[in-house]
Amino acid sequence: MNFLDELPENARIILRVLTKKSKLGLGEYYDSEIKSFLDLKEYKYLRNIYFNKGGISFNEEILDEIGILKEYRIKKPGRDKECGNKLEREIEKI
Image 1 (cartoon, helix red, strand yellow):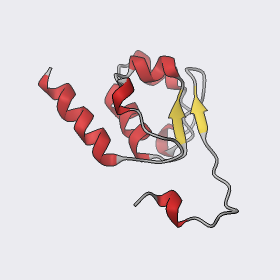
Image 2: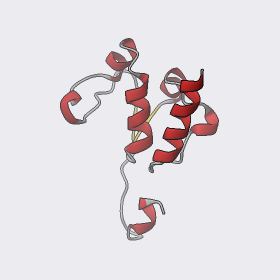
Image 3: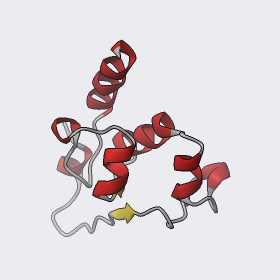
Image 4: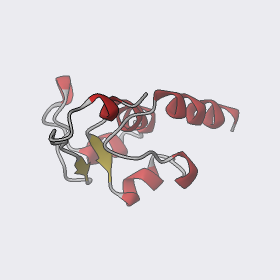
């Protein structure tokens, strides 16, 4: 069951689509730009955010750069931890 199914009909969902210049806005990296993570090749961290934070997505360029193939992209707002785990297993095989 998706968490969106549990929300009332009149609930508003905010979706942040981040670009390279966007600030992450989470935890200890609150003020860090996405570009910083890309420069450090922290792709796994960014993929984890994509699959586990329902209100955060990235633009197409970033999704491509961090290795989220089209067949693994999920409907946002929403999250899918299992899809993320499946992608990580595929990446580990390479």
